[in-house]
Length: 338
Image 1: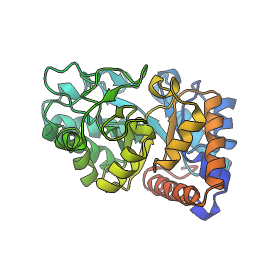
Image 2: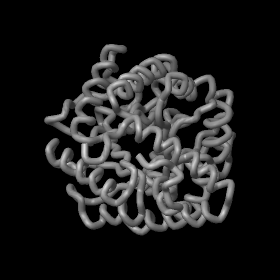
Image 3: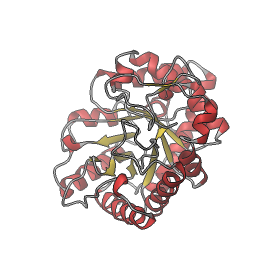
Image 4: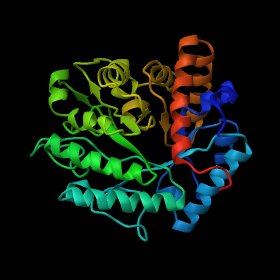
């Protein structure tokens, strides 16, 4: 693993991106993302998946190519929550989802089996668990993905999943901070808003996240919800008040912070990519997630490079972000060629 001082400004900028791609093998487009844009991570979806052997070959080729290009190992992520959001189907173990779990034993079984299967084919990051909480009887956008309606129960179940994923070699990314369980509009398509003051969030939505932080969760994903009583202008993923003041300062979180997919309608329909990236950088967010290949990825890299090279404070903050990433990569990724 290269020391941070060995990384060029272009590498420091690229590390801040996690991207999606098309295809089921190491294509020229994916090579461009690694060798030219120097991205820090990739995320796989159903379009990238055919079989366990194919995934193993793809993940190995990605890491080998990064090493050949003088890049640090990549985060290779997937959404494997179980239930309605599970990119890997049989012969991988298929679980009914968080809402179907009946206790801690189910959470342990899910996490241990999932971590084993993911690491076996080359993943090192799971975008799970969902820590959102929805009131009973509420028509939540995440009704089929939550553990339950009691935030203390969600906290126990979520932290169990986190602990057993990470103990078994898998980075866990809890989502969707600071909680989307009490929203009904889908941020894949539009920008939802939640009109709740901070004490209300602290008494309900934030309880699972506080517990996850206390138990060492490696990563937290920000939602694309506007929490209008905290920041009336920007969604959490672009909000200094949410990502920096609340998550970093008030909750004391020093781990990896990732946006939700910046291609989602809640962001894409309202903001251009350069504005988005400037907001991300100013909000102490480590990784911008862009799940669809296209010009936004290169534009995002260019904006990160221009912003961080033109501002000493952003440059130092960027180095701190990359240090966090390199620390996790040292702990959770295999060496090139292993």
